[in-house]
Amino acid sequence: MNKVPVWFKTATLVAGLAAASTTSATTGYFALGYGAKAMGLAGAVVSNPQDSASLAVNPAGITAIGERVDVGLRFFMPKREAELETSASCPGCAPIGFDVDDKSRRNLFLIPNFGFNLKIGENLWFGFNNYGNGGLNSTYDRNIYNEAGSALAAASGRAPNPDDPLGPPLPPFSPPEGLAFPLPNTGTLGVDLQQGIFAPTLATKFREKHSIGVSLLIGVQRFSSRGLGNFQCFTQTGRSDPVGLASCQASNGAVSATPSDGLTNNSSDWSYGAGARIGWMGEVHPRLTLGASYSSKIYMTEFDDYDELFAEDGDLDIPANFTLGATFKATPDLKVSFDFQQIQYEGVNSISNQGPVLGPAPPCEDCLLGMDDGMGFGWEDINIYRIAAEYAYDSQWIFRAGYSWNDQPIPDSEVLFNILAPATIEKHMTFGFTFAPDKQSEYNFAYMHAFEKEVSSSQTAFGVPGSIKMHQDSFDVSYSYKF
Image (tube, rainbow, N blue to C red; front, side, top):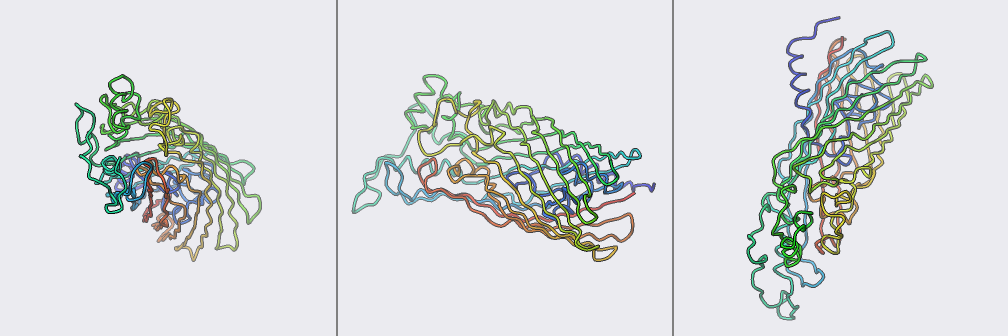
């Protein structure tokens, strides 16, 4: 066995430590693929493993990739935008001619990945990968909720007038006596959710052409939120005593005299948990290989500092998912793969529970933020379809291309809360290549474009139209050292 260079060991250690804090949002908030090779194939690797990063999809695949170390870096560039059109008519008020829109800043994220694979027995393999599973980030300089809410509150009660569409002037809106104005915690708006997974894996071959593998999934999450002061009356603390409840009622849900300290503007909080993934891969015909995997929910500890934002006292588990796939060897040099994946967002209350929608605020006393049935983001399960091709031009060059499409996780009615998490993407296009100058080294590259998708509603929970949209680009580079 050849010695791995010291510089390469150092680089992989740094990548492994950093991968636990990454941000990405493509198929909901899961990554489209893991590693440069998989991204070139739009993530279609459940039956066509590429490197140690492939165990993030199917642990059985490590029996087919040889002994190796892989380290890579993704340059991820999401563009997010949200708008509330308060110029439209709303129940009980006239048009007020004030639109609130903003683009989220910080549009470049560096996402490392690292893994290795070793043969430790005649039919036994051990692999490890540390990767960023996914996440969400938004940072709006304008607080869309506060600006739109203040404009609507200031215009409430105006009588339509033929000569003046806004009606007679009103005194400036102010909260109940004794409360601060402007509202606290209504500055910069956004959230930052980051997820990392450590996945030690064992796999074995049986019947020569079939493999089964299992991974322990050790999850790490970091979260913070900012600027959600407008939702204090949606928390248990904000409505828990007569003073808080009275202030919420007097301000029509705008401000509470007893604000929660578990909703917003706290420092980053961490949670930890574990789950498992099992996978199978088998050659059922010389030209056809099948694969399947199932990842359980990763059960995470609660975000104590945000126990009145996420349902179940700050619980945010990582959803279960499964993948099925087939790879057809069309020619000795050309492979075509098709994958189907389902991500089960509806199994996590804080993700799938209904968020604020048009109607009473809050919609019920049993669904306040942080409660077991507390409001969430209203996400639905999604199905993901991937098709990809891999062409070996010669012994040094391999080219890849892929396309994926998925269901929309965010219903139109849930636009308001998802200003924080505008994960609207449905379609991705990718291509990539590998250059192998010798038998030990591989240099890999991939590019991904996620097409812009807008989700809009004619009446958000604020009673006015709103929209969210996103598009993305990413570049992956990686280096592989084969023993």
